[in-house]
Amino acid sequence: MNIYQKFKNKIFTKEYIFSILLIISTFALDRITKKSIINHQLNNNSLYINDYLNFELVWNTGIGFGLLSQDANIFYHSLSLLIFLVLIFLVYIMIKGNYLEKILFSLILGGALGNFYDRLIYFAVPDFIDFHINEFHWFTFNIADIFISIGIILIIVKDLILSKK
Image (cartoon, rainbow, N blue to C red; front, side):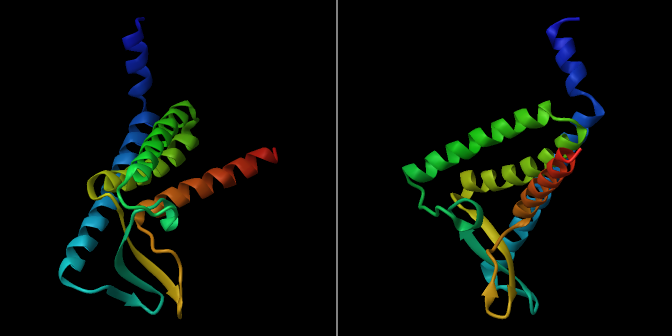
């Protein structure tokens, strides 16, 4: 069996196909929600949901939770390159991981690719979910951030459970 056949047999397994579909679905859901909120807020104000949740568009030029916010300068582009390298590393970890790890890293990758896409296209990430209690507002976030956070939390929980065995 040649290298191409080995590669083909490894890539077209159920777990890889499911992982790719999960990445695409996560990315697509993120894109749909971001485009919807951007289109809505071009002509409207924030969208009131209830006393604890609003949708209000905020452009984040930094990394998670607005940290290291910068205009599109050399630091911003260097940070974007670093994020790209992290994405490549996450793909490598996903490929090497077991089935559960592939699923969890697929969630992270789908969200991270959504935010990375925005960094390339808009030079900022559209965040819009404003969770608050009275005057205390949590960091504004988006659907991609939710998938990234769920993936990371589940990886930590999985590692804590497995480390006890």
